[in-house]
Amino acid sequence: MSEFKALGGNAAVAEAMRQIDPDVVAAYPITPQTEVVQTFADFVADGLVRTEFVTVESEHSAMSACVGASAAGARVMTATSSAGLAFMWEILYVAASNRLPVAMMVANRALSAPINIHCDHSDSMGARDAGWVHLFAENPQESYDNAIQALRIGEHPDVLLPVMFMHDGFITSHGLERVEVNDDAEVKEFLGEYNQPHSLLDWRNPVTYGPLDFYDYYFEHKRQQVKAMEKVKQVIIDVGREFGARFGRTYGLLETHKLDDADVGVVVLASTAGTARMAVDNLREQGLKVGLLKPRVFRPFPAEELVDALKHLKAIAVMDRSISFGAMGNAGPLFLELLAAFQVYGNGRIPMSNYVFGLGGRDIVPSQIETVFHDALKMAETGKPEQLVTFLGVRE
Amino acid sequence: MPDLKGWKDIPIGGMIVEAGNAVEYMTGGWRAFRPIWDGDRCIHCLQCWIMCPDSSIIVEDGKMTGIDLMHCKGCGICAEVCPDKVKCIDMVEEAKTAELEVK
Image (tube, rainbow over all chains, first blue to last red; front, side):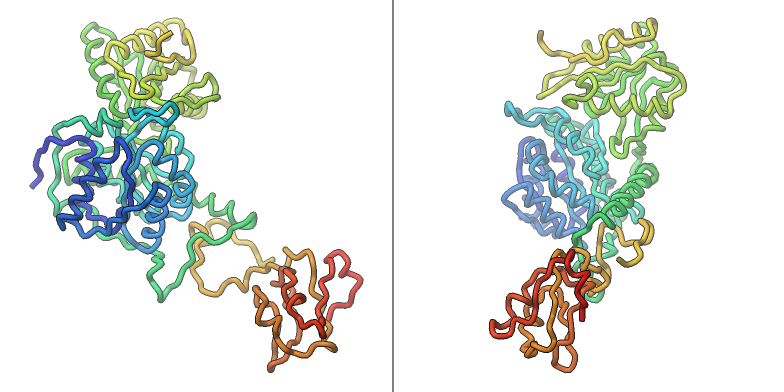
């Protein structure tokens, strides 16, 4: 039987990890992810899981241990945030390039300096080209559900890639909400066994991971990663559908709210989509035809599907919780990729603008998002944005 | 070099799924200096065979018979460990080996 519990995002993910009972967890605590590792360590100490819990001396070591364990054939999970993710950088690429389906929770947090422990998406966005699948959750329920689906996505024979699943640091990681926790046995049944096709421990079929790979073959191995990425979208859809059939909550690549008959739309990731939904409802009451799109998946970037969901709009505002410094307009990555997607898949020119917001945990409130919608409505009339990138909520 | 395969025909992730396949990888092309062996002076002590990191010293019936230039990277360890009184291996710049008759 499933049951409802009051859980923050971190506690919900720890709960999912208890049910998953991974073979190996190697992790290092960092705010605001710590609660995951701490709670899971309790589960290990209390004998609720059989996991080999490796307490390492750094995140670089954590991801290295995950890589080794995954190559050995283990089902592996870890969690991190911010500087911890940055410290894993080198090994993030190793995990993806060695095709090891590690699942990692990231509680999104700003990067130093100045030091800041609160939410923005700079950490995982910085790792967007490392070869991982990136899922974003709006709330603890989605984060719990993503934790269970992440392994199924990564371990799919067509994929074999690591998956990071994000939730907003403190906002979601520590915000208590009502979470439906699935039945333990059902979760195990949904996950099934993981059979690593090339286990390092299979001495009858010895393999070497990570040998030297020069100009004659390196490029071919990168091409294989592209093929795997191309397969991910369908696997995410299939797994999300199967999850829905079993547990009642179906997932796909994106979610919309009152978008179908809207004139203008806002695109935003993670917890801010919840706030934006409220802004949409407020403005709808005033008769304004506004809607929302929340991408669930950032890697692989669902370009065609996003354009398809947005192409009827007269203007689009994209909200980014990170800056791609030095990129066009110092815009955010979500905006830049969506612009590119419209260049390729869009028909006609829809005016688009970007709002960078919430850096270092700066609050974003419904009235601010309402101004974004009003700007978008103006943009729909004039056919062009007043300015390409707005830094929303920063003091002049 | 062996025939190069396309990305669909090789194991994923650069994984090596067969033991002992290093022999298929011809590393001789990396060489800047070529070991030139003088069989008449060789005393077959096999120090070079012990020390060669690429198993490129060819030995038959307990005697050295030559060097596998398809794999030798030209590190020169064989010439270095060859006993002082023998010194039957000379390291010669690849560019200058064209004029030599290689045994």
